[in-house]
Amino acid sequence: MILKIDITGETPIYQQIHNQIVTGIAKGNLKPGDPLPTVRQLAGDIGVNPMTVNKAYALLKKEGTIIADRRHGARINDKVKKEEPFDGKFDCQAELLISQAHIKGASKQEIKKHLSDLTDRVCG
Image (tube, rainbow, N blue to C red; front, side, top):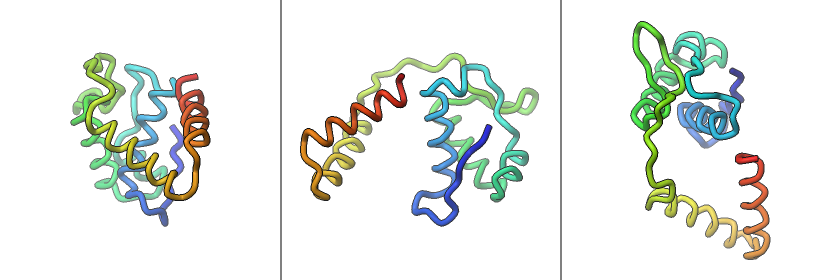
């Protein structure tokens, strides 16, 4: 598993790890049951503190995206609980991003096209 971490970026590293694992699952690059590297292994591979990877794994575990135990390590959850995908949190984040694009000068049509392209990229 190769993650691209922007050490100087504004997004915290643990959040970048989280986001890339979630995106990898959505794109089919990571499948249910796939093992993840150990905390120490991933930390060494990307050059970060193990506590940073541990924080990302803890967040993924809390969300039900991964399961982790001492015997089998961390792996993609193959029994993800189906929930309402468009909850208030989703709408709030999407509305904020759309608002930011609009403030920067993007038209409604440009935003729709961009979101459609992104959806195609993730969902195929």
